Length: 100
Image 1 (cartoon, helix red, strand yellow):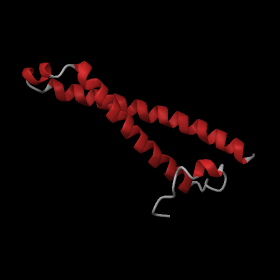
Image 2 (cartoon, helix red, strand yellow; image 1 turned 30 degrees about the horizontal axis):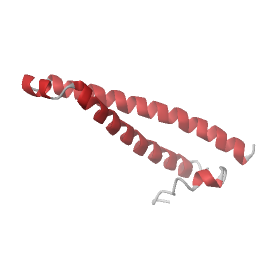
Image 3 (spheres, helix red, strand yellow; image 1 turned 90 degrees about the horizontal axis):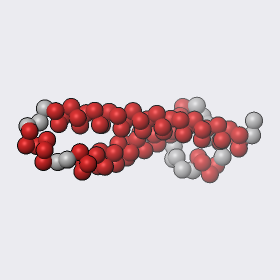
């Protein structure tokens, strides 16, 4: 198997991982905010409409998903010693962890 084929398979796995991580984090943030707002007084619940809060929650979830995904990719590259088996252009985007 060539480096290009391995890199393609790795990118597909990263895509699936990003979708899963993003979905889990977004759902968690939405349910957590709904749970927090359910316990808040009525005046606080009505002061900030969902249409205003939701974009900020989605942005926070997206940023968290990017950070977690990056850490998972760096961990996988180091754990399974994939740096020399993948395309160097891809590997340079993910610096080695400081523990290595």
